[in-house]
Length: 332
Image 1 (cartoon, rainbow, N blue to C red):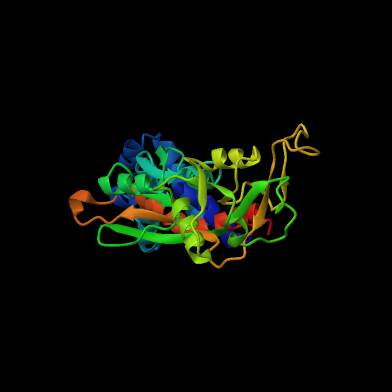
Image 2: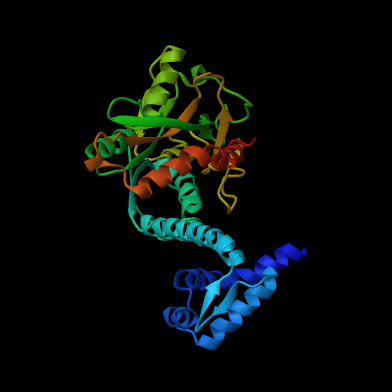
């Protein structure tokens, strides 16, 4: 630590006292305002003068008078204390802001890791924020957003932006063909949608984001699937496939493509439960996940500060935060 830095560190605790002395120009009054003994104030002034290297006050009758050096220094002390007060006001404001609530509507598949990852990043900075979470089909999420019961919606595909809704894409993840581990396609490194033309298909129900994506894949392949089951969540769909009741197209199930067998090994040598995920040969075999929000048109309906802060974090940091997660699930 150099000499000038050391002097600054020694002088910092004395700045409020010097600022008050500059206002009163009287040791007794300064002591009374600060609630300190007069002797403490006198010693502090003497110490400050020694640090600065010149007298800051001189005796003037029964009182004191500021020296030219003190008068030159005081405006800078006032400015420094003013900047520090501004910083305190910002911190206090932020602390008050984040005590609000944020209502988020999201699709089922985002609740296991994606949304918690974003909330964790936000709560690391704003501990007091509360979240109201609602999960369901994509259409339901967007309906809640439009109705005002949700502040933000996390959906795939990304919501179409318009006059009432703003949206932005965050990242993409691949879709995979999911088959029973004893299925004839299970050993493939890649597959085509046409390969399951005659297979019973486990679909998501109408209104779910995955349903619109798989419908597009089948249109591209030129046929309609033979739907055996309609599920409301990917875990159930994967379970039906694992039981040998059909095939499905889903986002990654939490790890790289390959076998997914029970931990007790019951699917290893027989036709028991277990599934295999296979990358698909199609330019449409992905889902793009994004954030949507209501566009506020009046000051009376202004976006609450907690919602704004979370939205800004997701748009700014979300893609990089989620990139590693997507690579891990995709086996990249």
